[in-house]
Amino acid sequence: MISFLAEWALVIKALHVVSVISWMAGIFYLPRLFVYHAEQVQVGTATDTMFQTMERRLLRGIMNPAMIATWVFGLALVSVPGLVDWSAVWPWVKAAAVLAMTVFHMWLAGRRKDFAAGKNTRSGRDYRIMNEVPTVLMLVIVFAVIVKW
Image 1: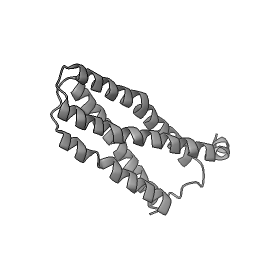
Image 2: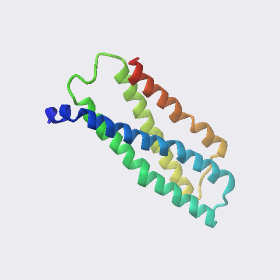
Image 3: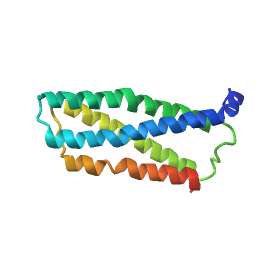
């Protein structure tokens, strides 16, 4: 199995990058949908139903599969002997940031359920602020991997 992973490491890395891009696109867009949903939509209206459909499809159809693929391909990559220097700090920083990104993803899933139940208590401003979390985590991940901090 290890030799297979080593032989296919570049393909796995490419699939990992594509998965990350898809996940990040969704993780940036869903809070933005929440901003407009919270600020401009009345509960129980046709527009509320439309936003709920958009949010559900984004989360379940794009973000969840992309997150799972990111984890699968990422774990496959770290299983390749010699690809990651585990004595360095950067893989641990990246791992912590990816775990935090996953927690943020789950937080977004919870907020989607709040909207679906008509029980959102957060403002558009709250969602705007929270939309900065994945940006900071993305910067940490990219600099950790590229600069090897």
